[in-house]
Image (cartoon, rainbow, N blue to C red; front, side):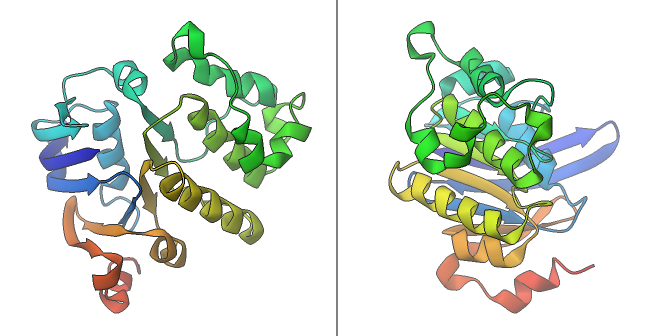
Amino acid sequence: MLRVEDIHLYYGASHALRGVGIEAHPGQITCVLGRNGVGKTSLLKAILGLQSIRSGSIRYEDKPIAGLPTHARAAMGIGYVPQGREIFPLLTVEENLKTGYSALPKSQRSLPDDIFELFPVLKQMMRRRGGDLSGGQQQQLAIARALVTRPRLLILDEPTEGIQPSIIKQIEQVLRHLATARQMALVLVEQYFEFARDLADRYAVMDRGEIVLAGTRDTMQEAQVRKHLTV
């Protein structure tokens, strides 16, 4: 579904990504781990087209997309849940969900019923403003908004940040369902090791703009991974 190979990304003279490569496959979750400031979000921005790469290759469904604008990538089926959720606080839950229509043709502009099966609390809060929701409810809204776009590849940036444990468990179950039942490919950036370990089919650990460890869940050595997560 997604293949990133040997990408280099700069902010001015700062070399943020140094030959980074990852893969995401249908029905699997790829987790990218690392401390703050090691390049995880820069990697997501490169995949989404929010930041241009200097060199390397990004292919989605075997098509090169590195030269495409962000809205074109969204229309191809790439969904995004940003760090900090970034919902619209003055819009209602329903209005927030409908902002996902922008990536869809008019014939598909409806709210999928299964969103409310995944996140029942949103059904009860359709008229409430996004800013009145708790952090966990806002995170559920951010994921649901991305699902409105009918993505085949879903990218999430630290979905457990500032979320209570009960909601983290629910989000974990939803993400696994999306991978297994819908055969979506997921790329998840995370610092919370246990959450990533339990979800990851594949993992990559970043440090100073590079991938320093990578493999499958079966080959993951917890001590090595944790060494690159501690401050």
